[in-house]
Length: 202
Length: 248
Image (cartoon, rainbow over all chains, first blue to last red):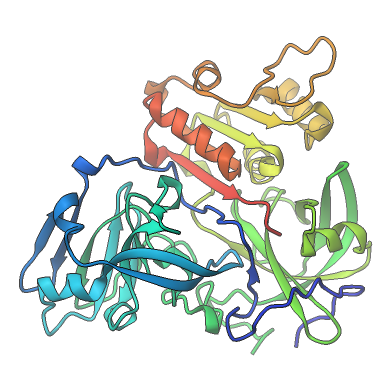
């Protein structure tokens, strides 16, 4: 039972409760949250790799990767710091397509995404397959800015946004889960905004 | 169940407001008695939850301003235009009120004795708050780690903890520098522009001193400061950043 805050009535913005998870508010800004300086990788030095529990480990250059078919999706995103942003438009390669080219081992259950600058985050494979995740390079029809994760970031809109690793450079498929950067720093291992899984133990 | 002591879970707990301190016209500190507080590390934050009598709730995160060694929790809050939570904390909250919070949160933007120094602290506006926790922790430890603080504010009246920072500069050997970006008092000898690479080259430790750097402030400020330090050759992984946007 929550404690009633004397004199608090709230602004109660008109939001659709089926789209805004508990504890979130809608913003039209695009706040930036990241640990450490923003890396700036020129496209000619960018690559994307897939390794670990796969039949065919792969590595693509920028041009190779972006010759894969892209999709444009409109999704809602939810940051653990409480903001949600609705109807965001992203263009990227579906992770399903990337995985299909590498062929996950039958024992693969999890993946760790790794990024320029050392950031990592972990996800169960089922959270990113079946049209749930992309490697995105455009936001709102424009090249993704470095502070928002450009040149390319992981996009997993169903989970809190720290799972959508900025500056992503590859994924490693794993049989066993391995908590990533924020996951070892007190944040929830899975991060479902609809269950308000913000921190360890939520 | 909320309130039950589940191991590893950050439970909501009731704190009591024991003091409210107006730091600047737009910044207020809230001093809290929090009987179940589990302790924190310098640089961490809490979540505040407000609940209306019909169950409507709003949550926001606020940095912890005090050292882990201090008995009372202190949060310092900037009043934001249209800020649903910050306007309540400014206009409505009184001494004796209960405030629901949980924490501490965040294991990254922290400084502990083992991490050593020297330290470069770079604050933009109310980004000074978690850095104050680090400064007070260092003082409580009687640490000799050398510290330089570069604090960017719009005007002298917007400098949070001004008297305290003056005391630290005079008494604890902390090198405190200001840049006032919008308005400077007559005779001002500090910097008078937004943080840039030239300023950081003058203020930052030499690269071979291997400093630990903590930057906190609005996004554009943090981007500018962190990018400039990297361009000057500082080691990215030793630059910790906390960005906040004017969204709540």
